[in-house]
Image (tube, rainbow, N blue to C red):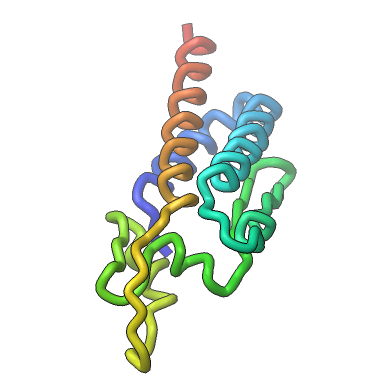
Length: 138
């Protein structure tokens, strides 16, 4: 699986974490909670099951935050279906896992709630860490 910018973020986090493990872990946890809240806030609501399925898992002693949506239809809401599918650059491999078999066509426009917020949080986390590294490097 390849997500644009993820390797750069991991490399920055790794360098920063070696010198500042607590600060790094705290930043990752905080942004993980932010991502979960933002995704829930932007999720379209019909029955509420999709919003309720958005979970945060903190792993690797706080160095990994995973936000997932655990309903079978979550990726179809995110990316759309049929002729309405829209996949952001860098997310093709993930979206391809959910491609239908052509049995029936339902054209549902995407209602992205996770990917745009991940991009915002990734940018904010990267900037936050770069600033800290710059502050400590002086």
